Image: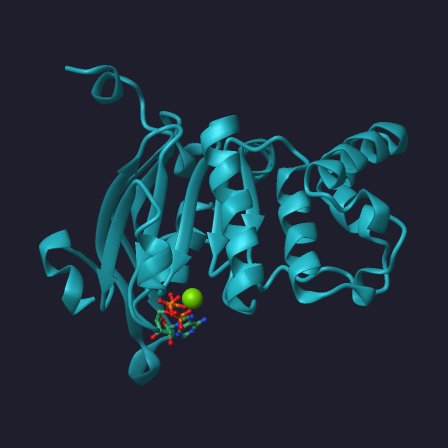
Length: 237
Ligand SMILES: Nc1ncnc2c1ncn2[C@@H]1O[C@H](COP(=O)(O)OP(=O)(O)OP(=O)(O)O)[C@@H](O)[C@H]1O
Ligand SMILES: [Mg+2]
């Protein structure tokens, strides 16, 4: 066995199902999905609109619970954890670049980025220090005092990435991180994500329906109608 096979995956999902609604409104969004992600990998989750990509991502990120099935994070079964420990685990290991997690437009860029640290109970001086550090890393330090509302789309997305990084996460989850950006700006944001993966070893899990972007990842997971499909059927996705 090589080193990768022997190490405990950072994420392992087994037979995940997720059903939304009840009775006639019932919809099986995931129908039994199993996968493993190794530490330091970059993985794209690819599929058509409505195929279950975001649902899967939310389960993997411990933001929602599956109907049935298990998720192990670094060998720990998430289901066995109390809500408090689950929140702490999510907060310490994961970062999120999701369009639903809006910036607070009325708060400063610095306050937006520091928010996860505030939630984690970090004191104001350390919050400020760490937030400025990641803003520096994303070349946004000069915007620290700006209201988040007064930024360009690409800058906002970089602030979202800064906020995702402020806790030093091991896994970065991104859902269509370049979906709202023009090609050139999208490319800059993509490069930042891949740099974090290659240089800092952050595990990158990204949902996209952009096949070109998907090709930049080490591995692709294809989903169709709530089921993973073989990579050979790639073109059918
Ligand atoms: N809260 C909900 N209640 C009912 N159905 C839902 C809910 N959330 C998602 N669904 C349905 O589950 C299916 C999968 O949704 P999901 O958001 O995972 O798709 P997706 O692959 O991320 O699509 P997109 O590329 O459009 O973001 C869709 O058919 C969607 O309508
Ligand atoms: Mg989605």
